[in-house]
Amino acid sequence: MLAARLAGSLQTDAGDWLELGSGSGRLLEACLASRSIDHFVGVEYDQRLAALSPCSPPVELFQADALQPQALQSFLGDRRFSCVVGNPPFGVEQLSTASIERLYSLYPDARVVNGWARLDLYFMLESLSRLKRPGEAAFIVAAPIVQDPALASFRETLIDSASEVECYELPHKTFDKRAEVQSFLLIARFGAKGGARVVSGRLAGPEFQITQTRQLTREAAIHRLDLAHYEFLDFNQALTRRNDFTTLAQLGASICRGSRSRHEFEAMELEHFHTTDFPRGGGDVSFGRGVRREFQMATAGHILVSRVGSRCIDRTAIVVKGQRAFTEAVYRIIVPESARTTTFDWMSSEDGKAWRCQAALGSCAKHLTVSSLMAMPVPA
Image 1 (tube, rainbow, N blue to C red):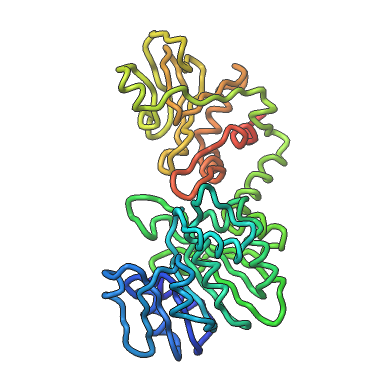
Image 2: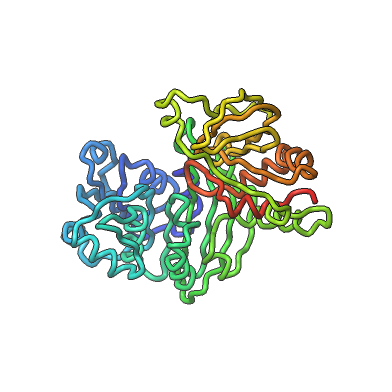
């Protein structure tokens, strides 16, 4: 259904199309089913996947590595396409010297560390370099493309050269029902003028229907393209404007993470508190009296929250008895005794949980930073 949603979001209805990394042809088939495409060129390196893809006219399928500029050039030459689409591979890979040179020629601000670079960015740039003007592009991308500060200049170039940009958040479990991975449908249309009108939104349900949209300014879109970020800013500002709220920092709180991992504590056969030990509904926890001064300890009156983990980032507990070491996946929060109960009650509330979920960073394993938590609004 996601392939059909991508194809249905496009306005181009003819011409030559290109997909680098066409895989088994799922996206290719969806585009052919909904558009009157004259010619669709797919490029796939994996022979097993390529064998599953349609290859009869109007499809032209090449088995080639999109990361090898010379090989790609030998197949495609200087051909340009009316529309480019793709679900580029996520992650980083160590590139050849020729690939690195090609990446820098397409995007001088690319970040390459010891030869390693982002694959999704490379595939997008290579695809866009072969797009006609006017033309249209659509990609399924991971969160860093729309969120990472290091890619702000890429977003700036895209926005300034396109006439329209749409970015839609996909449901968290679109690709893996067991894990939450944040991804987006990114569409860019290139007309006679640049300076794109930018819309950020969200798709939901089995048919990926648009449920929310918001128009972004150029500056905001360069910073981040994801709707959830701006919803969080609205939520946070509404809280901070309230006269009966302050922040953890203004309250004089101190926050620290645990000193060892769960595996390290288990190897030492020491009792410890980990994210799996939080009460499901939040609440009190009691410990023994063991003291190990070489580790960070949680003692009576301390508030514990999960630092990392998409499925447990909203969990919290308060220590009512004893003390115990806690892992690096947990934060210990100490606030003045006079504010302890109201702070814990707020952090355990649905709004408090929602705030932490929205403030968490990352496309897979979400995590909270100390600075973000310090800025968390709490009752004065």
